Amino acid sequence: MQSDWILEVLTDLKAFATINGLPVLAEQLDDTAIVALAEISALEERNGRKSNGSDLFKAGSDIGGVGAGHHI
Image (cartoon, rainbow, N blue to C red; front, side, top):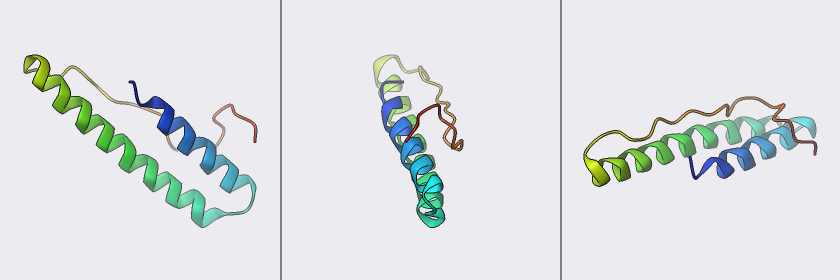
């Protein structure tokens, strides 16, 4: 997926919020990541259908984990 970077950024921001005692922000970032994944998936699905009339893309990402392998 070309847009994976935005989900990685949101995961990093959530980790930062969690580590620094900002639980409401961390929860909001979780919700934001879900919205981003849904919109990216829908966009890619529409683009795939425009190309050849079939579903070319299947989205999937780990957006809930705090331990994304990045250190803040």
